[in-house]
Length: 290
Image (cartoon, rainbow, N blue to C red):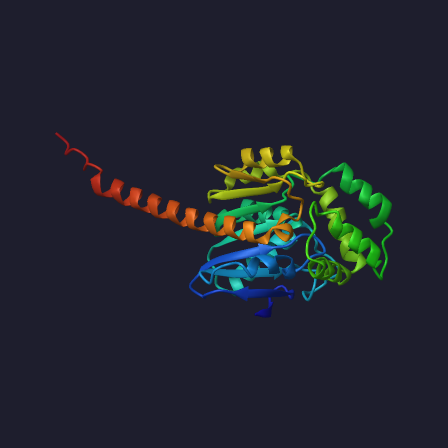
């Protein structure tokens, strides 16, 4: 079901929800110029035991498009407000591309709200990134409305290493055209200007999974290794032949890997709880003073 929710800040977020209310809550955060529909092929393949909440972030799709507030922390605080509004103490946070940076910011700022972290096509930082800077210089710095469909299509195609269904690509392009030029500019300017904060990920205590396609033209193997080192206990999963938007190229595989991570995370949590109970049960009482 596609819904909207108003936050106390005045921002209204559109989101899609499916699965049992009692299921594992998973918040999905899309990439720049996408929307909740970026995860539509994945949602179709998830079991009802996953309470999937795919959010359209501010400035995108059917969500509010304020004049300002497109930094990672602004978007991260929207996630916090969204979870508060739905009365979710914790959730597994899944972020793709820009969404991975928002997920990292949220996990660093609110580690107690993160039950699991999944980073897809993730950057360690976009600060000073040569490729993004070139895109800014050549196309974005002077971008005006209406957005040229050819630009939107070229941008979405650049995220792919393999063919996807034509209707999926058409949807992605259409969603990009809903994003005003000022939001494109504000988002990308924020990417380039925000310093590297990956050292703050040491605060993350939840299980973490990093997923990357080795034909990604935006993020690098070095990014993934840096993130694996930054997030305690993170595991790296590489999709051979996968592009930046590997969840479009093979949504079934990603859905399966995500569900496996959710169950592994739950099993790990049970083991830790049982270990804690055993420790409390068998810890010897302190000796009485002589």
